[in-house]
Figure 1: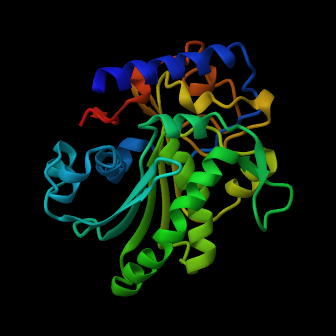
Figure 2: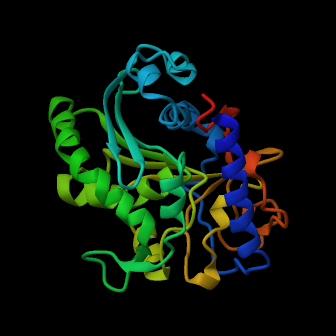
Length: 293
């Protein structure tokens, strides 16, 4: 079963790469987050284990005995698992009492239904943001999960008013997290000082007005990209998809914040000629992010 999943995943990623080969990325400009590099943020390396845990089976998650669960330890408490049958999407709600955070973590692609959503690249309007449009498949996944998550998240914020709220995801999960953080901020009136978005290997999720709107948001956000990871380069700018302008890059020589004035910064992901790595997509901070957990 795992071999079949891996082969299907490789096939899908290779098909995406062949569709989007030789496309321009010059419109994506990156702005570093307050001159920090990822190694200055040990929480990013801790949180990636939560993203990895979201891929694990229900039984090992509920018992908190998956590999990543054990790495995180008993200071992390799983509160709830949210599943949507139609989209095949999943999110978990977990408390990290060591870091004093409430974490909503969206799983990346792990089944055929997820891949079908990935292929739904039509841009659809985002409510309350003029001219902003987002990837239809990602948006539908967010809507399918968030009506279940919002009341539970609201309760936890009320129970733990001093805890920060992390919205987290890898791959497809990163796209869902990015769309969701805007909804949570608006619906739950979360303070910007209390809210944080962290994604790993996130694809592009919307058009330029959406990217500009997102970049203007005042809460902290970290879009982490690993070396030659394919997924952050799709869908392409030729298809009218753009990233928000903040990124942390994990290159072969370690962490780097890209030059905000030079989109062709040779040490950054936008200048990578070979952005076709599946393995780089599945490994962040030496943590495996897939169903092989």
